Image (cartoon, rainbow, N blue to C red; front, side, top):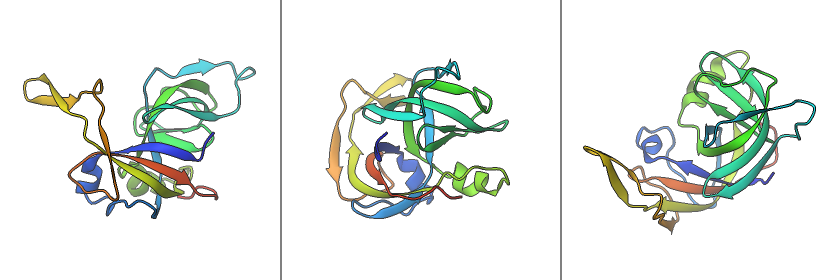
Amino acid sequence: MTDLLRITLDGWILADGNYAGFERGARYQFALEFWPITELRLRDAESAPRPALYWLKDWTYRVEGAVIHAKDDWWVLDVGLRVFQDRRPTWPVGARVWGEISLGIDPFYYFENRTHEPDAPALIYDWVVEAIELDATPFIEVGPRHFRRDRSRPEFTPVEKTDPQSDYVLTCRRLPGEPRR
C-alpha cells in the first residue's frame, strides 16, 4: 500500500462550495469515496490476504479489503485505509472482498452527513497535494445532448491549483496519523 494516491476531483464539488479549491504543495483534510470498476468479489476469510491497495493506472486500484461498516445506504471498506461508498452495501460487515476501484474526494456525503451518525467510522485523513492535473480529455456525444469524456484519448495538463470549472486528478500524499471524523 502506498501513501501516494491519484484521486479524482469533479469540478461540481468545487462549484458547490464544498471545498475552496486545492493548490499544489498545500495540506488538506478529506475522506475518500470509492466506486467499483469491476464487481467486488467475495474472498474466503481464511485465505484472504491483509487489506491492500495497489495502483493500476490513472485513478484505478486493485484492492483487497474488509467491509468494516454497512448501513442501508452507505458502507466502508478497509483497504489499508478506509474508503466509503454512499450507496446500498454490496456485502455485510466482516466480508473480505477484492476487485478494482477508483478513488475520489468525498463530495460532502461523509463530512456533512455521515460524521453525525454515532457509529460512523473515522474516515478523514490528512493529505498534501503533490501534483494537480487538469482533465482536458475531449468529450464525445453518447446520446442526444449527453456527453462523456473519451477515455480512449486521455489528455491531462499539469496546473498549480484548481478552479470550479474543470475536473482534475490530484496526486496526494497521505500524512501520518489516524483518521478522524
